[in-house]
Image 1 (spheres, rainbow, N blue to C red):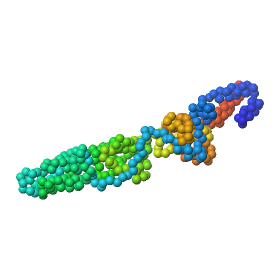
Image 2 (cartoon, helix red, strand yellow):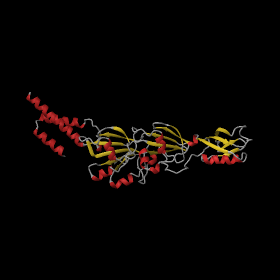
Image 3 (cartoon, one colour):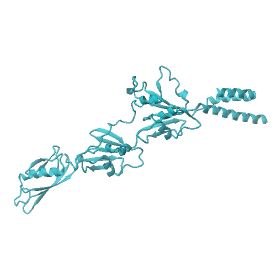
Image 4 (tube, rainbow, N blue to C red):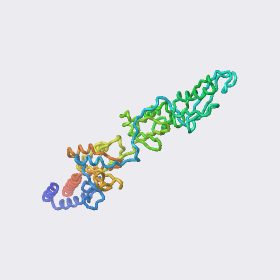
Length: 380
């Protein structure tokens, strides 16, 4: 209204030639390209019953419900496993090897030759049944035992045939008594479990730690065919989540997969990786460099999100359509607080719409230049 009244006054005061030029420039300005759509343009058709998208205004009243909607993200992990105590020493598993030194002081020994007091049995493999084979003693079960327990079990078996026997045992961990640190650290490799209280952070430390240049590193654990995941930040802040390693575990560290897109009258238009576990709409504004002072419409912050058809709901616990536009108004206290609590999801598009005043300023700029040009022509 103000713009229309101002334009009418100008036309009454200016010569006809300039008025014609101004009218032409107004028509031209209305067709000038925009850096981003205006809110009304983007939301056009939203009230149509056959609209392919829905609009959700983010306010204090709607936040509780909206933040309970399904979460989109990369390949899902099966949560995480907390710390569980285990044996303080190593545990023998099938596939491990043991070295035995058997001492016998008897003059006529079944195990050693004349003049020898000991015999060495090296590289004995623990079978899939958890046993090792010993000459004259047959099979001895040693799986799930500590090396000391296994030594006693073997000694008791050998005492049946060699009354003065003494046994020394060395345990060599196999695949089931080691964990693989696959990638994302300075020194990947296979690491034997020193005991059954060996935790994930201890493993990462042995591997040289996670490089500092990895953005929001994510730790992944493969156990028994299941993939578990947690962020390094959360792991460090919660000691109870420092899970205890098991033989056969595979661990790798990767950079954050999640990202969001930003377009429109923002400080920058880019694909931005999540720098932390949770990113709110206010965080997103900051990560994009804020709003462009000359172009942005702070009442028209739109977040566009695609949901899979399987998440569409009609009971309020999910979107009613696959395409949803969340609208935020950063000119009110409620809008600002709500933006600080609304969670951005993977692949969201954060669109900062153009302010209508940008077009008005463009038109007035063209009119000003037209008047100056007209004055120069008349002076000639």
